[in-house]
Length: 165
Image 1: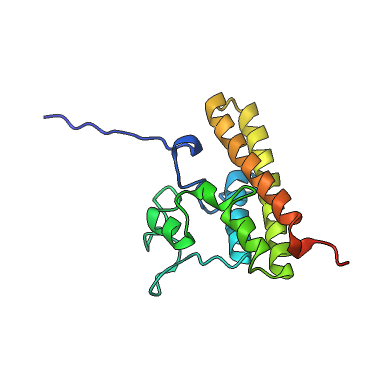
Image 2: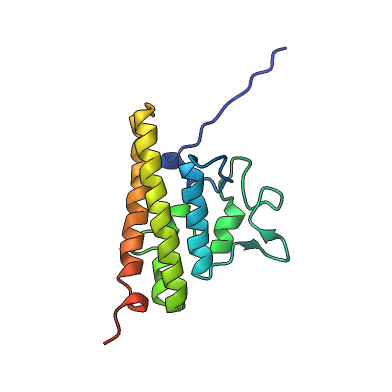
């Protein structure tokens, strides 16, 4: 009898849970810093990122993150979305919250975090391109970057940050 192991590689193009929320391993771990900035952005806007009933902030230990750092279905449910990308874009939940219930200070803080996420994702894509990452995977990273850029534009142009008359 032989044992076989099936390895499944999840990339942003086939994963509805977004990019992993992992702890940066060093100053050059731009993808992890970008994910951290995305997390800080949604926290600034007032999203709950805690498992109900005292489960604490999303983690591997409470079922909020997979072993690779991706949000689980439970975490997506807590955020009120079906997939990670539903948070972002001009029509995403982050923009809706920024235009609705968030204060000017929350929106300013969220925009700063999201600008940092965009900068880190741009750097990450540039480095991964130079390292020879497959074009299909780079395209998925660029797709998410584009969504984050549109989110930042929409948040920055929203009523909370509009100049006072």
